[in-house]
Every structure is written in structure tokens, then in C-alpha cells.
Image (cartoon, rainbow, N blue to C red):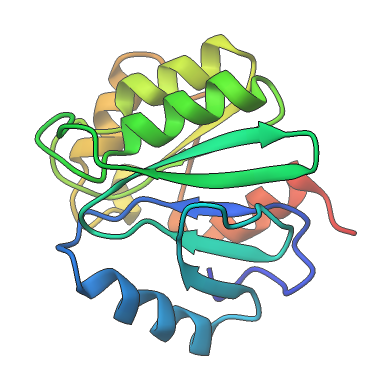
Amino acid sequence: LPQLPADFPGSILVVQHMPDGFTNMFARRLDELCGLRVKEAQSGDLLQGGRVLICPGSRHLKVKRLPLGDIAVLSDEPRVNGHRPSADVLFRSVAEEFRSHAVGVLMTGMGDDGAEGLGALKKEGAMTIAQSEDSCVVYGMPKAGIERGYAIRVVALDVMSATLQAICGRN
């Protein structure tokens, strides 16, 4: 995230498997390090270019397209893949609401959370990316998406920013 420019045109939503209470500190720290605006997500937050919303540690993050703007929606639905938040929940919501006008990125982590959601995004025509094995600390989540055939591209961490900028364009 610190490598992305402040004028990055997309809204970035992050599901991080962290406990409740840590995600707000994580968001504040990233906000200090990034040109992008970073905050812990709240229901009703607008999805805006140059803004990063970090899902709170005890909630699921979804999106909703509305006539006056696209928003984040937090949910207390049951755990998915043993997680709340779950990357699958976010990816499925983005696939349903934005279809081919989205990019899904599955990065380092244990287990297979996010793999099926990445598949839902791919099915809708969205660009799907998994982090390369050599650049992961833990390869489980990206590996699951790649092995199931859901990652259109496999990208190393050091070129992820450039890849996203090339895909999303700039203002």
C-alpha cells in the first residue's frame, strides 16, 4: 500500500485476519505510511479513489452499490472458513455488486480463505491476482486460489503496486 500513489483511482478494501482491536491500530499505522487515506471501515463509508478501508477484526466487510455512491457494509454474519472477517465474504460481495469492474488480490496467509471468492470474481469477468509463492511469507491462501484456477495473474509483492496501477490506470 505505501507504494501506491495518493491519486490511485480505485478504492481498496482489505480483509486482514487480525483480532478485534488490532485493525484500528493497523489502519492508523498504514495511514501514517501511505499517500493513500487509510481507515478502519465503518458501515456507510463511501468507496472512493485513493481510500483504503480496513475491515474490523470481528466483522465481515461487504459492499453495496447505491444511486448516490458505493458504500461499505459491515456484517456480523457467522464465520466463513473459520474467519470473521473473511476474504471470501468480501470477494463474493464485490463480484455481485461490481462484476467485471473490480480487481481481486489474494495475498499471503494460511488456509484457503479467499480462494472461492476469487473464483466468484473471475466468473464475473473481474481481474484476479494471487501473490507469487516466492514473495509470500505464508503461501496457503494464494496457492489455493492458483491451484483452483481462479488467479488470472500471479504477481510478486515487489511489483504488485505497479501491476495494480497498470490495471486500474491513474487519474
